[in-house]
Amino acid sequence: MSDPVTRANRRETVGWGMALIAVAAALWGTDGLFRRGLALELPPATIVFWEHLILVAITFPALRRAWGIARNRFDRKDWGAMVLIGAGASATATALFTAAFRYGDPTTPLLLQKLQPVLAIIAAWLLLGERLRPRFGLFVAAALASAWLITFADPTQVSANRVTAGLLAAGAAALWGMGTVLGRHLTARLPATELTALRFGIGLPAAGILAFLDEGTAGLGIAASDFPTLLIIALVPGLIALNIYYRGLHTTPASLATLAELAFPLSAVTINYLAFGTTLTATQWVGVIALSGLLVVMSATVRSGGATAAGVEAPEPGVLHPAD
Image (cartoon, one colour):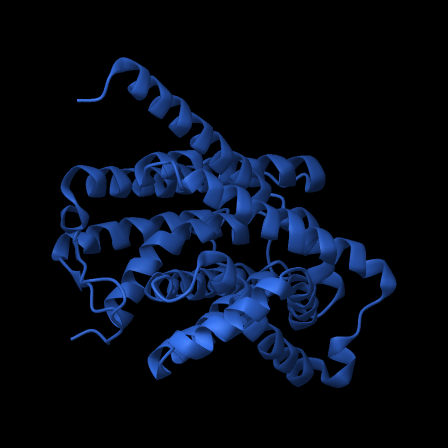
């Protein structure tokens, strides 16, 4: 049994960890503040290309290390997973997320990213063979109902722009969820810093191809005045937030991390209200609260009864195979 001093130190460590996660989550909420203006001005693929170019330049030393490690440790399945992470979860997902800002308000695409944990479990079923029990269907149904309420200011009035924005944001959430699942597989092969750098390194040419297919060579160019905003996007809700998040996650139980991450929707709503005058309707607030509550319940259920209590049976990490 641990002594009172040890328990007090552990509580203090967890407290600081939760604070760091909350700060990181709040920084994620700033994304729409910067990305929406660029999305209305530049093609989404162009924004994503430059975002990746900046990130590759910053993480280049880690990228060189990652390449050397991966060449010795990766097999064909590992490289396939890495390409899906870089081209899918990094380049394509970010392009879909950016495009969503062109069709809707600056808050909805951010809030719909709270679907990621549920979509990640579905991706784990497809890619890692994690078995889903019937009770997980209840979580999925609740998540979809919450997403519907968040997407439409009036859930009885469906507009084409809102549908498009919702589908683009949900598509991004699904690809990012897939990236989380495949990343779990690859963490046994590559340290987190190098894995992140390799993700950006593979995402860069994929983003370049998307930009070229969308706009030709013009899709690779930007005005000098756009660069500061792109740099902020890459750093603030990007690298800085991610670094703070992982530092906090290292000492924080997953269930408490989920609570701390609620700073994300609160930050997004507050910032976008102050910057753009965007407000949520009563039904959208119901959706936000319901989806956030669902994630807290899922996390608490897993903590008390394991993954099977939440309707998931997980195989050993590091094994890639399709669902039966």
